[in-house]
Image (cartoon, rainbow, N blue to C red; front, side, top):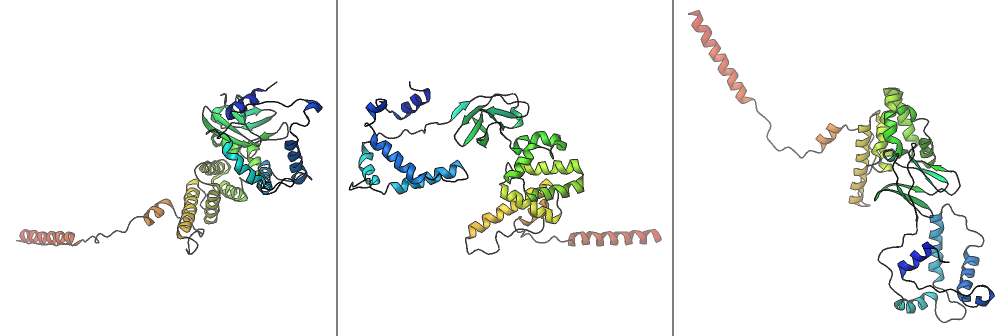
Length: 328
């Protein structure tokens, strides 16, 4: 019995499928294939490799494949790659579009701005609460679409009953209710993932001292919203510079983050021999000062007050003549 996914797969690649006889009657029909699978398993998966992620394991398998292409099977005169080079022109061309291997789901977003996929929960932007979204579930990650626009991407949870929350998905709600920010589960997950750094915490603490808990927290959320347009490393650099200078506003952080990005761009343009570029700034330049510093040179002559002096002399002369007439 062919499954729907297998039918879609072989239809996409134009494969004509036929099947070996089951049991001992068909044991001899593909021994070479099964033997090479056993060889690969014994030489690369025994003992079981220890990796940090599925992506790391896939990278290792790709390198093993490249290495195995240079070996000979038994006493054959050519390597695997050499035999494949002869066979490749006889194969059908691959389709222009890749085959979508993910499984599709259409869950509804609950009031906590989360969706349930299999046995786990994942966050999406709060504006999607109550809407139905499309989820493509892959082996190592999942992608969430609102119509045809990607709105969220998560690493897939392996254990059952897990929950993966993205702090950025809740910022619009938290800026209206900043009191909920310190105890948010999404904040704790961001800390654990290294996205919310000690620099964030230090800047937040000083902002609360200066502006009060509510307004200081709101200022931090405004900084986090900048992360949608400014790369994370530059935003952290901007926070660090603003913290040293005591500039505890989102505008100051944005300016310093853009300065850090500009310094990196200039350093990359100068090349390895460039000097002075890419150094972190120790003081905050406010926006109007930054604009003045980047204006083109003013070549106009300096203004003169000579015409005004002539008017003043004429006024004095007229006043003196008038006083003489009165005296007469």
